[in-house]
Image 1 (cartoon, helix red, strand yellow):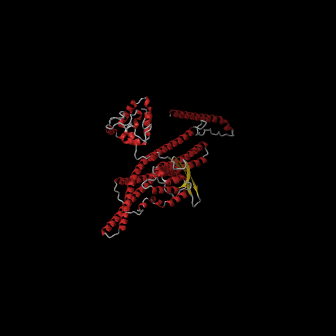
Image 2: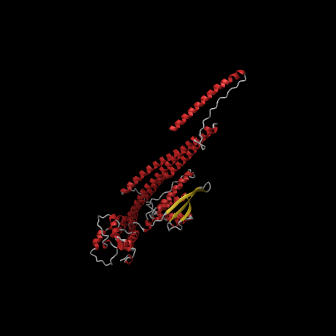
Image 3: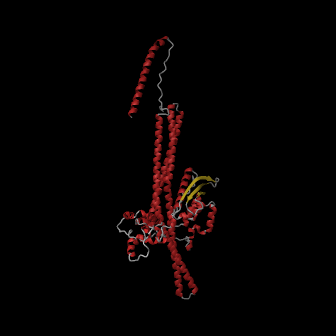
Length: 554
């Protein structure tokens, strides 16, 4: 019977796939259960193997000690050229989320009960923050950034769009996401800075931090579906939309009414004692990690300050060399001094660029995770508030029950009063149950968030350290290349002549006499002077030959 004549068709239905999931996980038990049952369905061809239960196909029956590779080899050996349709059906079967007969590991990876269709088809976001420019007058000046977004999400009007945002808009997004998603670790923006906020290096480091914040927020499986993020990324009338949203939701400032909906408010107080050892250990770990990261950030700042000081010293050295070359009369000496001055200027630029790279690679990562730990602590505080809300609801429930029991013991209360007390007790039980569920759900959510935090921390620090080391290596290579180029210029210029030319030795002037005695003695003096000059020239030639021999030996 071909695949076209199969009663299920070429592609298995969704109901049959869910029915086969537990059967594929436990094939041996299914064979025992299906043997005494009569086969009511028509016989199936090998092409329908992925759609039939394991107990009905003798070829898929396997021993428990067979490995996935041996089973796949047996299946490939049993298939012929006419059974290619079975391979295609298996591929479609696996693509639909069904476990294949190749092994339990693939089935476990492909069938995850907690993975929804929306999470499987999670939209992609690519957010860039650029074009920082200063706007406003002296009293209201600020930096405005251009936020460009590319996304595959259907919740947005267009796949590509850009808006203008300032720093306080990013801060509003962070606070809104924190309030509307208790227990979620929201990526925080960089901190405020009153002095030097228009400095070029500071603006660039803040721009990079804001871009990283938005990309992490958009990649978060919960935060990427938040309405506040959509308003921030897409709205052209941002201020009006924010005011309209706050007017529409008065409880926006306090978890969008999550705690107030339970009638608990935000005034829950009291000392919180952590009874969960897992959360207690994480608190201790986060405190120690925060202290170590702050110490590392101080060390990075010290290194950056030293690089900037070294760059400034190189600039001063260059200015001194330039001044010396200007007053030097000898061209053979002033030219190398001027070249060394230019070299020190390039070295200064190299040190300044390396200092900025250190801040943008490793420094920004350390600073980001210090702020992320603060966000984690905020989530811990929200969990504590949920715990106090739960216990407040329990205390209120106990009061209502005590009042009801006291009224029932009196026996003189009207039925309406009893009905009201019963309704109050039921309402208290509902609130207490909701508060307990909120506390438990927040605990489970924070466990997954902290696992995600640890995973991203390892990846980000590994990438940051690698980028830091690559930048340091490239800077050293560039520095070596600058010095080698300068030495080559000293050895030879463009025409092949020595860059540094020693002054030529000229003979001393011959004094002339007007008297006859000097005229008679002049030929003899000239002969002696000529012999001396020839001796000097021979010494120079010998010195030059010796120098050439030494250079050849080197």
